[in-house]
Length: 311
Image 1 (tube, rainbow, N blue to C red):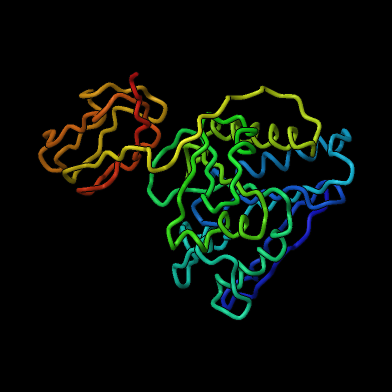
Image 2 (spheres, rainbow, N blue to C red; image 1 turned 90 degrees about the horizontal axis):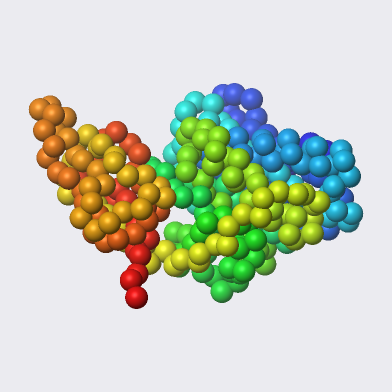
């Protein structure tokens, strides 16, 4: 393993930002794994640390394939992480909305450009991402529908689901989208935590990446074979909204089976303690995403459900 600074930028009031990369093996640029692009992505940082730990042991045992290089970038936005903010602290911009970047632009555009220059030429790109809504997911692989996506490769992670998303205009500046445009097979891996560490889903994510790298012939690794993934279009998920604001008491979580009319959550009056609304299942299915904040605003999406179709 070699550790190096991939990109650095001076800061006016503190030490410079240094983005580190960990290289395993030598040869063709085979796979790049990126962790925390946002300051609250503690789970994503932790998963990358465990991947680095695993790859170090595999390299020591000679299990990295000859002529192949794997790069791991555990954190990009640790400035924000150090002060508990999600986005870049000085202007609240999102690095994952700045790709492919601009070397002469604003700070986050320069960071995105510097990082992307180092990671754009790999055959496979894996990002541990987080969702814009606060909540828990069933662990899954997400891909942009750019015309370059390959769901068959996404199946090799062995996670329960592969989700295909039709990109909106703001998605064109994400890492996943730009990796694909630059002809990298790109995958975003989601677990069921962001700003806290969930050991079970972190272990599942590490195993899924090792499984993928092994199946692509990049490492020698023996583990559980995983799932045969179901491929979903994001538009197929049913959104369930809160029709009132208040304290959110969740009754169902990710991967729970629900039946139409079954209670999924309650909204409680924050002053008087009465249940002002019960959120019930609109269909038979499986909970894919669940809101996990203690408070909820009216019209917020609190669940996304995989509908179970009866024949």
